Length: 514
Image (tube, rainbow, N blue to C red; front, side):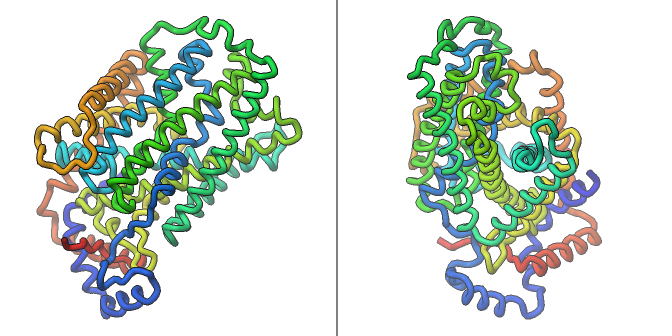
């Protein structure tokens, strides 16, 4: 933690020193810029050192679908069934979660086209509420949400990969799982550092792979239903819960499997024609994922009883063992591919959050620099890689992500509330997409329900989530508000910035003049 304090406390001065630090690199500027011009398709003298608009509509759909469809629908869709208590109740929750996320995504389409900045919630909270709330969101994302999410996804990938080399009654050792997970994070970070197009191709390929896997499950389940396997759908609502707390927890489980629907907003600045492609990607992705999720759960219930689903540690694998015979081995491979693609998308988008946070002076300024050869946010990607690798060594990683779920619902609610605030405080803001106020108000009510209800059913997790948020307050005062830092500290910071720029051949972003 002491190192985090040192790093964060440098935020206010780092951005101001970036340009001067780069110019102090001997003989670097003219030669490096000309060399980049010859090696890159971008002419630096005209465009400047900037993140390019690489992402088209298909890439946007690939990012949203690829991040949403992770391991959850394959491994643990039983969370919704456990809380609702019935087959019919669980299917309704899956459908409602998809509709709720679509409404939330429509709100983010307005925010994302009105505020053309990468960073998603961070940018919207900053615009509506100011620096302090946006810094706290960034703090939670940097310290808990993003690194733990990446680490857990990598661990899931490693577990399924290694299962192919160990007998069923002999699980892979924890050390091997952690090493493979670390290799996965490092490899994907390397790909994202090297070339944005490589990263998007990986995303598109593995998104297609996971959709193919779910289509196999759906077709198999529908065939079983046609053959008469419908007993689990008789008296489908028998045993349904009537407790609001359990219903909220069922929503939490369902929404967790839909999480990632707002991740395209993290890379708005790199999206081609964002006014068109952002809403189109949302309107294609969310209905598609909702239908696929609903049909996948119907397929599960066509083969497995509710008791068998609750007893399974990996529902898709159990399903494959029952239906695919000698080809059952393909399902663990598909789950591994799904987690690999989801992790790639998370690494790609989260690095842009670090980049934007540093650009605003809320993180060390060298994170807001771009490699001049590859035109990728090299330092931000490596920073995300390092924090994720650190989380792999944590024994409390799964409890941390539980605390973060409550916090994420809180900040998403703030973003939606920000849409309403901006309608009042900035009515002149150009809004290419302007939705009815019914949608943000409805989604805000859902967020309030999801934030308040767990206070009675899971008070400890909620308290720990609030403590994680509050822990960022002293770092905000030290790093952002404290302007007159000691001269020795600023000199050291400037040297670190220059060293980072030399080491990663990076320069601060050059804003294009209108």
